[in-house]
Picture 1 (cartoon, helix red, strand yellow):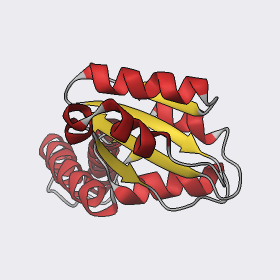
Picture 2 (cartoon, rainbow, N blue to C red):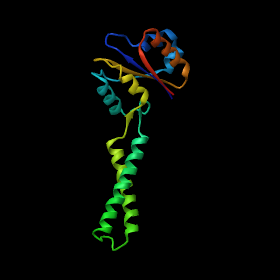
Picture 3 (cartoon, helix red, strand yellow):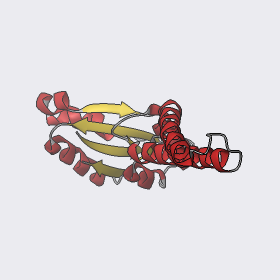
Picture 4 (cartoon, rainbow, N blue to C red):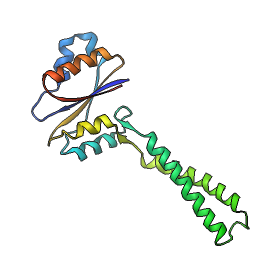
Length: 166
């Protein structure tokens, strides 16, 4: 799915509302829009994007992999210490470390899934640098690139900050 993120300042009309109407019913039926609430600053906008858990605007794999790996490391170290220092696993240190790594990886994945590991994409972070109080982030998505390119040109004509995601 291709997407175009547009940062609409206060008092400006959405470039897509008139653009979809001007382009005709074929284009307007293909375009989908998601409008985020008004943002006060860049940090607020990134928080809105993260809280929305939108698959197009966020990425989550890096955080989930980090949560699993850190959980496995913490579990292995904890069981290693319990086995070596306190002799809790009856001298089976190798078994204790692998058991701790497996259990820690599971708990890390569970924690990552429950807490959420989503962060805004780099393209959205770049747009967030231009946020002024009251700006609205719009996400236009479409299966084909042509309607989004047409919308991109409208944004350039109006000198709006926009970012493309393939």
